[in-house]
Every structure is written in structure tokens, then in C-alpha cells.
Length: 245
Image (cartoon, rainbow, N blue to C red; front, top):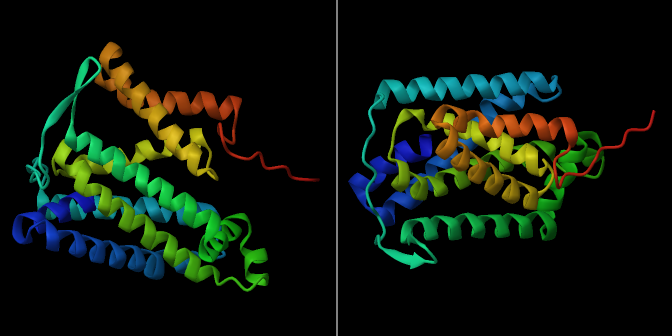
């Protein structure tokens, strides 16, 4: 939501060449401030504390967006050439192709980063155990900061593509909850699972909306999530956690 709302201001006032670096800079600052000022003091506290804090921050940003932008839909500028071309029995817009290519490129870059780079391996180790990571010399607080900064930057980059399709408005914050079923269905510790889960959730939501209506379509991903959690709690591609008693 914040990525789309801020990027539309940058595009309207400065153009795409300046808007993209400005948006990335804002994302870097927002991610760093959220982690350093709000979430870092909760290190060592129960995980529910951090979860509730992120929800509180989400509602805070939603309120800020309502105060400054209101609830109306603002047209998003078309910052790249728009055309369509036939693909089998349908016509596909160039914007959709660019969006898919950008998302795929980010997935590939993240997969390479997590598997090949030292910092990526440190992030994976930190996700497994904070205490073990610290004993190996990994600075967990630095890993936390980098995770939040990377998440914010990626969200702001994709906002440039997402905003063109839907426009800029406050209720985009609700779209973020669709990432929860996608990640949990695919598996929390799998990049491939996140990709497959995202595609599965998107396709099922569109089909449910077409045949059952918008209200059923919006909650359909969460229905699938409930079924998957009951049958396979770690997701399709996630690793089952075995705990010895």
C-alpha cells in the first residue's frame, strides 16, 4: 500500500528515472526504522509480541494513509509503453508480461542469494535458531535489519508494476493478507513453495470469483489454507520439523 501511494506521487512529480531511486530510498528507510525502532526491542520476547506489533504497525500505516490520501482511487501513471499481443485464444497486455518477468527475476535473485551468499546462509541459519547463529558469530540483529529492508525494497519495486493494474488507494493494504495463504501453502522455508503457492492462490481466487462471486473469491485462499494446514501443516514444499522428546 505505502509503495503504491508513495510511488504515484514520485511518478507524477519527478518522472520514472527519479521516482524509482526515491521509492527504493524510502523503502530502505521504512524497513530500517520499523525494525530498529519498533521490533528490535522485542527480541527475546514471545513471538506473539512481535506478531501483534506488526499488526499494530499495519493498522497505524493504514490510518496514516487514510489521513493523507483519503479513500478515493487515484489513477496510476502508465510509466511504460502499453500494448497487447495474442497468446493462444487470449490477448495478453505487455504490462502483465513485465510484471511476471519482474516477479520471476526477484524470485531467482532471492533463491541465488539465500543459497550462495554468506549473508543469505546467515539468514537461513538465523531462521532456524537465534542462539545457534549467535554462537557461530552471526550478528542476529544485523540479519533482522537486512530482512526488513529487503522486504520493504522488494515491495516498493513491485508497487510500480502493481499500481498500474489496480490504481492507488488505501485498501491495497488488504491485499497483503493474501500473501499469508500463498506462503503457508507453499511452505515457509521454501522459495519455490512461495512461487507455487502464489500462483495457486491467484488462480483459485480468480476461478472462485468467476463462478461463485467476489465475496467467496476473496476468502477462497483462506479456505484452501485451512485444508492444507490440516492435511500438511508444513506446506507442500516445506520441511517437516521433527522434535525429539
